Image (cartoon, rainbow, N blue to C red; front, side, top):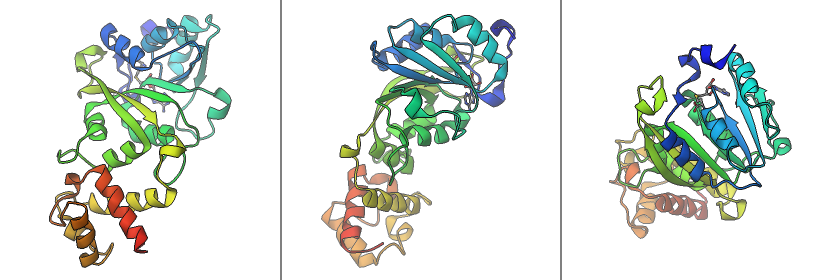
Length: 276
Ligand code: SAH
C-alpha cells in the first residue's frame, strides 16, 4: 500500500509528527555524528526517518510493526544504503539482537501505549544491567509520563518511576509538543526527553538498587500515606525513624517528598543494618 493511502491506526499509536521545528529539535537533541548507528522504533510514514537520513549518520535501522507501511517505507528509503527496515514488534524478545545491529542511539516517536515496556527494554531495570547499553535515547512520549520521569522531589507527580529512571540514566527535558504538531492530533500533550544511560561504573551496586526498588514499591503503593504507615513491616519504626532523622526527613512525610539521594541513603542504611 502507498503511504499516501494509509489511514492512521489508533490501536498502534499512529500519530504522524508533522512539525518541522519539533523534528529539528529531536535531531539536535540526538547530537548525531557520522559514526552514529541509529535505531528508530515505529518510523510510521517516515517523517523522522527522513530527517535522520538527511544527517550524516552512519546508518539507520528502523522497526515498524504495521505491515501496511512496510512497502511504502521501502519505496521511500530503500535506495539509501544506510537504511534498513524490519517488520515486527519491537518488544518481541527475539526480534532483533542489539549486539548485532550495534546501534548506539535510539531516536523515536514511540507508541505511547507501550512506553513502559520500551523504557524497560532500552534502559533495563534496577538491580540488573540492561541487555545492551545505548549512548543516548531521544524519545517523544506522552507529557504526563515525561513529567513524572523528570519530576523534582516535593512535586505531586514525583513517583517511583522518577527515582527508578533517574538512577538508570541522566534525563533531560528537550521540549514540549502540542497535539497540533501531529496528524491526527492525539488527545494528550507530548514531550521530547533525552536519556543518557549510566555506565556500570556510575550505577549503584545491584544489591542497593534492588533494595531501593523494593522500598519504592512499598512506599509509593499508597502515595498519600505517610512513610510511617507505608514502610511499616520493612523495618522496626524506631530504626526507620533514626535513619530518617540522620538524613533530614521524618516518617510523617509522604514518599514524593524524599529526594532520590534520600531513597538511596535509606536503602544503604537498611542494608548496613542487615534488614532485608
Ligand atoms: N515516527 C512516526 C510515527 C510515530 S507513531 C512519526 O513521527 O510520524 C508510532 C509508530 O510506531 C507507528 O508507525 C506504529 O505503527 C508503530 N508501532 C506501534 N507499535 C509498535 C511496536 N510494538 N513495534 C514497532 N513499531 C510499533
